[in-house]
Image (cartoon, rainbow, N blue to C red; front, top):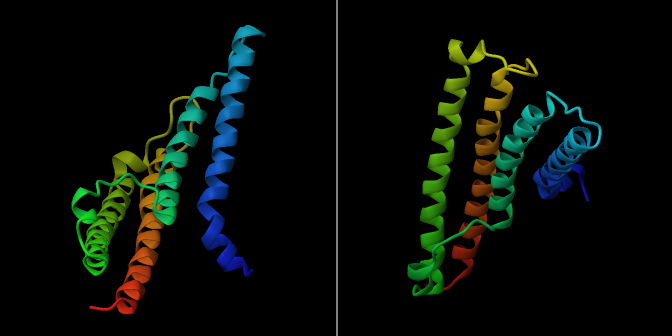
Length: 161
């Protein structure tokens, strides 16, 4: 398997798994410090929050990759196979449009002086690092939705009218 194919298949899963492991370790460490050693980590809660925000955005992209987002399929289920594929295509186009707008608007927000100049309270990290999770997650999701669009187009081409 080529490196690019491996990254395509596993990028979000590996990164989200690493973030989740770090979150669990941080929480466990902080609980241990607080209740066993009577001294908590002052920065643990803030770092956990930051990691969780990144974890969520990567999880959104991963769910687009695997097709595991929640859907309401009442109307979709009554359609023929070909009509269902067309509906999937239109819905994916709408989602892609939303993700592109979200990415662009998030980048505009991050570039605003009042955001770019902020730092986190405890860690002192630049807030744009936290805010960057949204456009990166939405951008990765847009790539996954685009992949879904091409798969759907191939399925439409392969079905009979």
